[in-house]
Length: 116
Image (cartoon, rainbow, N blue to C red; front, top):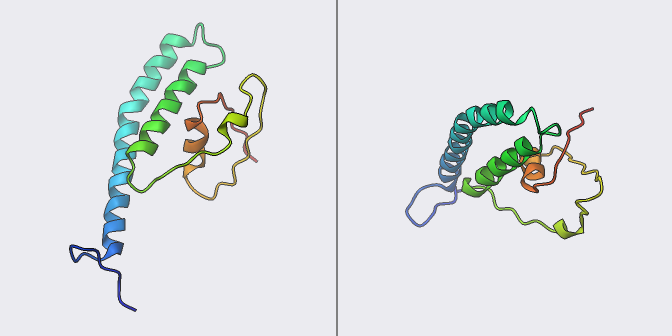
């Protein structure tokens, strides 16, 4: 079986490997920048933000940035309007990929994680 070749003559598997490396480097850079900001926010907001909502929204912003700049990820949300933000909700993740947590935070709903 011949490997698939794109229009410039490079095998598609090499292109996907390069895009994957670029994506993970972008995530790493975001975390290097994000962790000090998150630590400063924690110190500044912990006296008055008991539920850590400011930290959550900052984390949600990071997740949106990561999901937006990664070239291998295309996301389409369905049913987002059906969730009532004023009531508690249970969102179940099946952990089929690393993206589950990023996707939950990208919804901008205050979330708490429970592990089994």
